[in-house]
Each structure stands twice: as C-alpha cells, then as structure tokens.
Image (cartoon, rainbow, N blue to C red; front, side, top):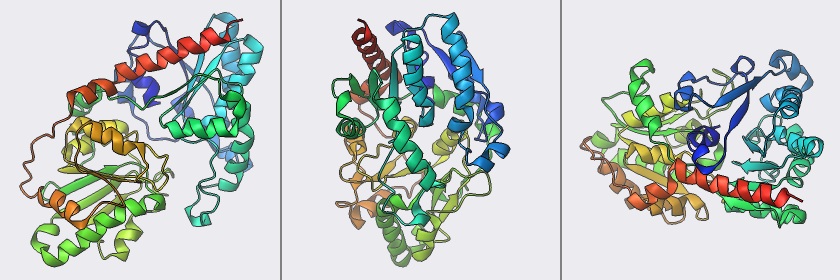
Length: 409
C-alpha cells in the first residue's frame, strides 16, 4: 500500500495517469488510518470493491482479505476495463492471491501487467520450522501459494521487487520469465508523512514514559529476529549488573509485533527477554497501531532499533521512515541483508550484522543516550535524493514503459 501511496503524487510527471482499485475499509479488519488519505492527491480516482464477510468465509478457511475480495475485484475491474482504455495493470500488494487476476485480464482484455514483490510469495522458508513458528494456516497457504504464484508470475510483463534475490529466486523457479523486464526498487522516503504525524500527534495514545530512555522498534516480530535481538539483550543484561543506575533507565519497546486481531496476538519478543531476566526493561505490544501513530512514537523515542530477520533476503522497508526521524539508530541484520548496504549509504555507522556486532558496539550506542539531548543524526544528502519516493517512482515508470513496449506486436 505504501509503495503506491507515496508514488501517486509523482506518476503523472513521468507520463502515467493512475487510478487505484482497493478494498473498501468496511470489509477489512485491519487498523484503520484515515490520515493516509491526506497524502493522496485529491485528483486521483479511487475505486472501492467489496469483500465477503469474514465471519462467514472464515468457516470455509477463506479469512484473508485477498481471497475474500477476489471475486469482487474480478467483477468490478471487468466492468472498468470494458468501459475505459488502460495501458497497464500494476499489482503492488502483499495480498498476492489477487495477482492471479492479472493473467485473466491479460487474456480477456489484452492488457499487460506488472507485479511488485514486496515480500516473497511462495516461500520454502517456514517448511522446516517448528509449527509454533509457522504463520497461521501455513499448511493451507503454502499449498495455495505454490499453485497460484506460477499462474501469475509466468504471464507477467514485468516484475519489481524490493530485493534482487526475490527476482533471482523467481527466475530460477520459472526460467520462462528470464527475459521479462525486472527492476529492484526499494520503497521511497516520503517526508510529508512526518509533517502529517506531527500535526496530529496529540490525537495518539501515549505509549512511552518520558522519564525513561526509550529505544523503540515498530513492526512485526517473530522468532526469526531473535538472532539479531539477542546480542542487544545480552549487552543490556550485562549492563544491568555493571551499571544498574543507568541501564535500569533503558526501556526497549517492540510495538505492533503481531498480525492477529486486537488482543489476540502472542508475544514473540517478550519470551526471549524473560529468559534473560529483562522483563522490566522490555515492553512488547502485540497490537498493531496506525501508520501515523507509529511515526509519532518513533519521533518521541530517544533512539530506534531495527532487528532484521535471519532470512538473508529480508529488506526492512521500514528503514526509510526510521531514517526520516533522524533519531540515533541501532540496526542488526543477517550478514547478507541488502539493508546493511542501504543504511551505510546514508552514513549510518551503527548498523551491524549479528556476526560482527560486539558488546562494546552496543554499550557505546546505549551509553551515548545518557544525556537524552541527542542531536539529529546526519544523513548523506546524496543517499536521501537517491531514495526519495519521487526517484523510486521514476524507476517504476521506466519499467512500465518497457513492459508495455515489449507487449506490443
């Protein structure tokens, strides 16, 4: 959603007029954030489709918004494409089952389509993991994705991905797409979002205690992040023994760690903290909060922490809003994660992989927060320009141009 949202103000200057088709919020059970509409140009036409009632469809195993809305997308867009001339369909969502409609519309209306891979679709990552670590309904989703992914990918006219490895994996899995135009394009920085968050920050629930030194992470949790988090927790536990007066003031917040409905999320970070005796220093809020509430919390924090997955392909799209706040930032990733290179481009010198981070690295970072008067960190101006949303939008449009050119007879 954020890819499209932050690109909408810039598509037209690169020769593309965009219309959006999305599920009406009446049919979703996700955290709502009406403020997001403030960043969408008022001239953009937004079409809304229905979805089956989750209370009924879940009894048939169809709880995801993608599956519940698939039939309605088909009916609505069929009518739309029959009445208007469009040059391209762009799927930019992690609700991947919707993408199978691309092949259907391409055959029915002779219109090319591009898929944006913000995450892996069909993945082997969880196959050898304990059931407790697998996503809900993994058995069903694994088999569904294994069937649906090739139907969508093999017929696509172009692929965009936040990680080059995602594209490589798809090309290896489906050799027939090796000549399809591709582009690795990370999410873009969108400074107006901070202005909106500041304007409305008084409307958000206060989650942090200003008397503490607060280090904040907002985003999904999971045991796949434990390898990145544990060195930091180990250093925190040791610090409580050697300098309890200072380290007891540190509070690590992990917010919005579960995709489960409000009140039903299971902590995935707190058990690790408890095993190390850090229950007083680590707060996990499994309920997700709205996007602008997240930004407000990041701006209220004394420092930010980004733990990466043990999956080498993982690229944390959240790094861009984190960077925009210019707060002191500690990041720990898989050694192969592309996020490390991105952060280093911005001249962030407190980004590590979990093979080279040391207790001294962590202590130096934490002790520097003692004054609670940290100046905004500096970011490379060249890197900021490279990673702005308008720059990323241009790259998307360049791929669109190639995709429709190659589709012409």
